[in-house]
Image (cartoon, rainbow, N blue to C red):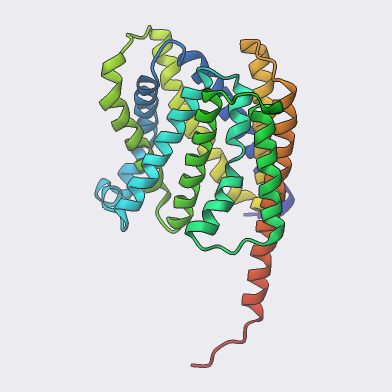
Length: 304
């Protein structure tokens, strides 16, 4: 069998990442439309049920006992809680904010990841990355409200969601060696349990069309996550990860087309600064990874 050229694999990785971001954006549009009628908990319940059905073959292959009894269950539980909370905060935020505004705040998560990694993982952060963090925060402040006016609580919801999302990413780093099906299954089960506990208190009987749309949320989200994972297998992270920032382009376009939400100049300017800072932080992380790899390769081998 003829091996696939690396150039073709890289292009496939880029295409998959772009498709995944488009799918996430469609998911966000459907979520914003549905959360106007159905509560966040009901949305998460049906969404997670659909995702669990998609995961069923993979769960069967890995084994339910293996998934429910991982090596560090409390860490899995904390990560699953953060994952459920950040999704809930996102849908809560888009109830009040334009889609582009909410996505802009969530794009600030790499800034929070850098801070949390320095605080909790004791990761060494150089002055260049701290500079990127400072610039990114300036972008966040501009997007929140320029001119010293009062900051609205919906924006604080979105920003809190971004911080929780960053915490979820930190916990994912800590669980990097764990089975991927186990990680996703705990996320889905956490959201399902939250929905089961809270949704009955504000249940709205959905039409068949809306029920299908709620199910589609879980299916599209699962497919988008699969696309990101496969993209990272086909091409280096340094090549494909920057394409994740196309989320803000789609969020702006879909917000205008479907909801008539034109982002303010403060959001546009803040988003540009946040994206630039995020890309800078990412490039510095890649440079540090290369430096560590070079140092490891040059370390003399120890004789037995």
